[in-house]
Image (cartoon, rainbow, N blue to C red; front, side, top):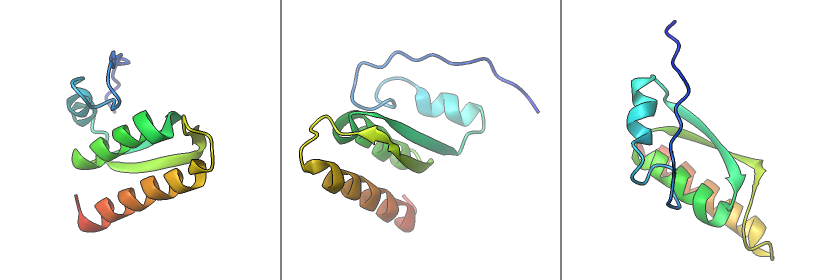
Length: 94
């Protein structure tokens, strides 16, 4: 099995895929599935998950490892929204 050096990408956007070449780096390494978590579920995490799906990666959103910026009652609804969009995208084969 071939090992790769770590890749560091500077991201100045909501999505880790926006303008970074991340999709190319992941494909070159044979990565097909991503585990995503982190702060800002309602912004960066959501944008990264949806862009990953558009790039044909399988995405698992690590719900216990994420929180929205807006911590009001939106937490449950925002998580539900992201999960539903990911499920629809995977079901449709996007």
